[in-house]
Image (cartoon, rainbow, N blue to C red; front, side, top):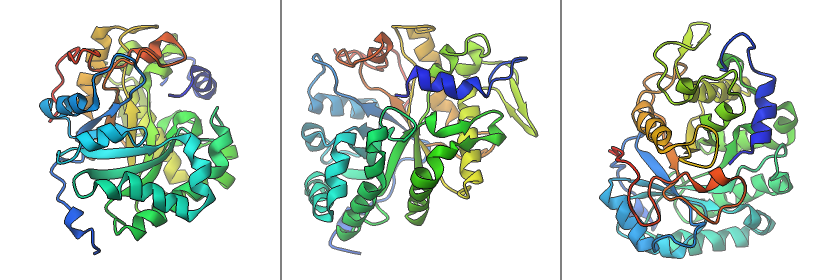
Length: 356
């Protein structure tokens, strides 16, 4: 997740002081998408010493009609448990593995063979996410040199495997890549991140018809700007328009943040690019405005809202992944990092969510 410091610095220059802030041998693998574009997935993190085994976790996904999953690395137990299940997989490559994959095409080919091809056609891979929150403007800057070469090598490996167009290759970014986010129509990427880093990645995504992935957290925006941001605006519960931007009106922060990224893509020459919200959620404990009640309100409203699109792109469903499946007691950093789960480690759902 994006650090509070980075978000604070990002938003400090964008607040309005007078109001709220705003085919191949793999042909048999090809399948019809049985879930809609708006189907919400869930991120499955494993940083806990009290979590159930992967086969029980996948059973929970099935029992609760959750048909998309984000894995942050090639978790062998989880991938085996996903065999034969109608669950689409977003599979991650950890940042620490980027230098090795970028070093040679053979390494990338081997990675795709071991972690994707060996599970086909039993596992339904939707995306390979190369790195998470890598940028020259944040704490993962040391990996930024390797990101695009690793993405290109994985894309070549996917093509060689006969999965080109079926498994999309992308990377997941945090909102620190934005230089301006207010008003949403003026959204733009940080200039220092553009030329040598982000622009080539955007062209890569465009050429391969792949989405930009963004971890988007109204919660963090709210807690570093409590004097300027209303809680109901962050929780989708504001009863009236909070921000007017030309002809567009905003009643929730999620829309405003997402539209600022759409605007940044337009300014960078990629206005038709899709965005997948690869993480979002609300913590239930450990910090400002954390409670089960607020987690319920945010996630319940999120599941309904992403079917509707944003003011900038109305009636266009937003593919979204909720963070996270479980509270994770071994996560480092602030206490809130441990309290994002929809389920307790004992597999009890904290509150009912209508995954459809």
